[in-house]
Length: 250
Image 1 (cartoon, rainbow, N blue to C red):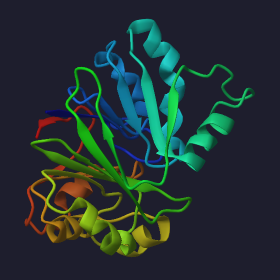
Image 2 (cartoon, helix red, strand yellow; image 1 turned 30 degrees about the horizontal axis):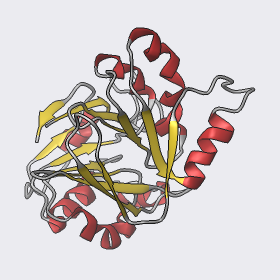
Image 3 (tube, helix red, strand yellow; image 1 turned 90 degrees about the vertical axis):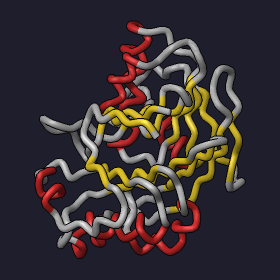
């Protein structure tokens, strides 16, 4: 199964990175809808698609307004947007408020109803069990775990390590962990104050959870990704620093 990182950054786009949006074409899954959402033009097709939003900060939802551009270039099937009810309501009432963006795309909004997991069975897609869990970030955020019959993935962004003890059980043993890494090692105090983590903290979480591979994403747009690359590494879990256009099999 392929994972393509369409956007690897946080907060705002910069010359090298757009904000978070990832696609698993064979699974029909889209993770967050940041400014890289326009790059879905290369992947959308008439089959159904599911978007999973972690929260409603603009760097994770602004791409939802790009639908009409994509629709002119592709023929997307039904697109279902999943997230916490209050976050989806914020999208509907504010992002698509008439003075801001008056033409609502034909999304189907599917609030997570409080059950800790759901099962998706879509035509021409492999069935997947989805779990979600709370994270620690201003305004609230959630992480996700996706389990197919033969592989698993967890997506954790916009959190501090204060929440790690509670979310570790949800990501334990996954084949691939996508984890936020806003700052290099040594910036832990600022990470805690802003609702983020450093490279060392993300690697400690991955090691404690016993994951097989780690991808670091949601990088600080004001920073230099080379600082992350040269930042001290535990080396315990095979680690990749995400960049826009990264494609990998898992």
